[in-house]
Every structure is written in structure tokens, then in C-alpha cells.
Length: 362
Image (tube, rainbow, N blue to C red; front, side):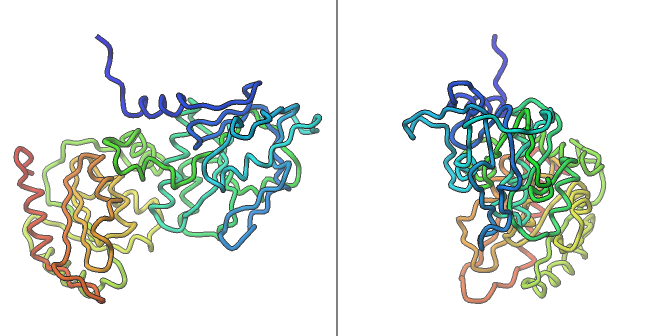
């Protein structure tokens, strides 16, 4: 009897199944999303990090160099990546004649072109993608090279906390580097976190453990210990009045510890610790609910749609479903130009349904 195939193994097999490579095998692309180069020279001077108003870098010919590279004459046979920002990296490849470079660096490097790092959800897709690349390469440590001109943001501090060795391409210095392995990570838009139709999220539990352990937070896989229900309300500035009323009501409930937090004002390490100590995460549709990925396995998510956010937005519902968490959502009966007040009774009822699920009473 054969052992069942895990979602992670299935996903990695699908990546490897559709490969396109040069004749010498030193450049391989997988499903048009991920590229892996061997014995490659990277020239940081040929990358302009602040290359345009979109914040994406501009890569000049010779940014990457494979000695003696011979690409197939027909363009449709060449290894390539689907997204233009990533294909621009491979388009710089040169291979005519040897290139002087220092000794080969053995540590695998991962080149990351961040498309939307300003929000927690956007940053999480990049972190998850690099984590998946590490698993794909079969290594536990990589050097992450951020190749974009994005201005510094609070979530940037989470990169070294997660991966240790992280550097912007402009900080590599002017000299070319010869790398044993360079992976061009998938663009955030191609993260499995956006594959809403998928039945499962590959490596969901492993990624949660990775993030928690990287920030020194204990991993508790249950069962839930006895005690008050820990409810975290994600605060948003334009919902302040409605959230204040909701918080006041929640604090009157027996066996409930309710707290309201503006996550964007906390260091990411504190956000991780808060998520790990939350039983039910409550909040208006927004990036703060990305923490559904880090909640304990017995937790629940209550998503509120008081404003103009489309009811079809499935980001956080799918995160909760992939994790096997309790999930419920509230939509106002009538939508108008102003956010609707959040009825506290709606959240109270959701907490009761969470606590008294069949066979899961807390």
C-alpha cells in the first residue's frame, strides 16, 4: 500500500513536471514561475533598483551571465518566466566569452522581485514564496536578494527575522559575484496563497511553524487549554467608532477576554505573538486578517464587510478554510457610500457558534 502524497509533495511535483532547460541544464524554469540557475555570475551594477515609478527594478543586459550559454534559436523554446517583471531578469542573460568573477559562493541565493510589499498580505505572499523555494531547493538557509526600489517600510524588518541573510541588490557592491545557485522566486501574484480554487495550501502548517519559530514564539498545536476565550479585534482607523462599541460589548461577556489592536502599529514579532495567542480573530475585511495563517489550529476568524469591499473577496476566507479554522462573515443588508455600523450582536452570535460547534465545545 503506497503512502498518501502530501499537498506539499504534490505541489512540488507539479512544479518539477513542467520544466524548460538550456542544453547544459544550467538554466531551468519550472511552470514559467520559478527559475534556477547554476554557476551564474550576477552583476549588481547592472540593476537599477529605483528604475521606475512602479517601484520595480530595471535590469540591464549582463545582469546575469552564464559562461558559454547558448540559448535555442527559436524564442518559444527558450526557458522563460510568465510575468514580465521576472522575464526581464532572464532577458539580461549573456554568455559570450568568460567573465572574470571571484570564487563561487556556495550558499544558494534567491532573487525576489516584490510586487506589493506594502501590505501584510502582499509581504506574506513573498515570504511564503521564498519559503517554498527553500523547500524546492532542499535547503534550510538561503541568502535573499531584494531586487526592487521600494522605499523602506515597517514590514521590511521581518525579512531578516525570517530568513537571516537578506540584502538589497544595491548593497551587494559594484563587483560581480559568481553564485553556485541562484533561484528567481515566483512573483507574489503567483503565490499559492492566491490559488483560491485549490483544495489545500501546500506547506501551510510548516510555514506557520517556520514563522512562529523564527520569532521565538512557541508553536502550540492544541488541544486548546481551558480558560477564557481570547478574542482579538483588528482595529482600522475608519471603523474606530463602530469598533469601540463592539469592544465595549465584548468585554461584558463572561469567559471572554477581548482586546482591540492596531496591528500596523506593532513590530511584526509582536503581531506574530499576538496571533499565536488568539482564539478568535475579528476584523473588517483587510490585510490584518492575513494572520489567519498564524492562528492556533483550533482558532476562528470572523470577517466583517461594513464598507464597499466586495462580498466576493475570498483572500481571508480561503486562508481560514485551508487551515481548517472556523470562519464566518457578515455583510450589511444594504450597501451605501458610508461604512455600515457593525452590529455587536452579529459578532456575539459568531462567538457562540464558534464555542458551541458540534463536537467542539470549548
